[in-house]
Length: 350
Ligand code: ADP
Ligand code: MG
Figure 1: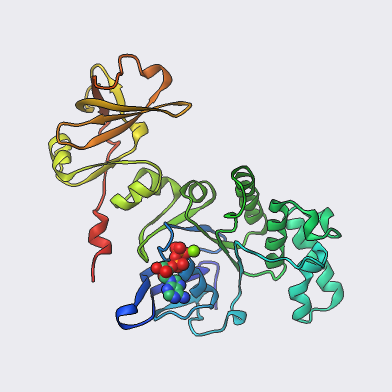
Figure 2: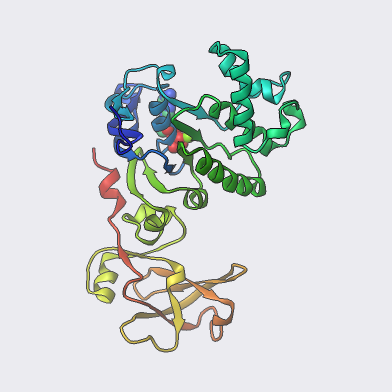
């Protein structure tokens, strides 16, 4: 029996290797993850980090080398895709060009021999879900890219799955449309209330849409958390560098400045250029080596005596006295820096 407390998806010690011997590629390694029912959950990571392979194992298109996939508490590791209560939306969704939008959405139900009246009703509802109620009679060629993407979504929603898997579904859209669809997709997920597992390599997209995010690197999860946790308290130098821009202070420099000889990360927007640090602030001087105009402010690169550098985001009115080659004092509050583990310790294990 599943209860509302049972996670929608559990991945237990999931491992996937392709090929064998010298040609073995480990795509996914030791992934443990629990996704709650109704969550908008993102798998975020660079290309090749194993996101699609994880999604395909959840869907059943790929069998794990070891480990288990549980859906609503039930072990489905060795079940076929059609026996699982999940649907997938791919980036390169293909709509049937000769069918209307309504027929495209109904098609899967027709294959499953769902009666005509129910089929029509459910397709109408799915098109309402994706805000295309008035578009049922159009052909795909009469739709914009974003609308076609929403038809692909309706085609999955019409099956009323408990879990929807989305593999970079907005990747083919241009930036403006993509941003609109991010808002739309999040709203649709809230409306229909089903669990979304969303794969993306775009950190901004993952942070803006998700309840929680898992950050992938080399087939492993480096961190799972809310967007705020991932952004404010990256646990590894990889997460700090991949999600937004961050500075990583070496263990040595951290020891000198913070009294704790472990690497720390600090976001550029937490660092100020000051005449005098406030009481209790951490402070260091360096030489300005670059000033990059950002629009809302500027990003100043400051070279430090130990050969490293820090990036500081400075508001437009904060650049007085800042010149390339000139010396500046940087300051930040004690809580602005957080410790990070060295990702190499995590990823280079045999
Ligand atoms: P992502 O979706 O994060 O870009 P993938 O899951 O597609 O990453 O791939 C992870 C790794 O597994 C990559 O090194 C990729 O080349 C490899 N891989 C994926 N699928 C296969 C396959 N069918 N055969 C061999 N290697 C594969
Ligand atoms: Mg992929």
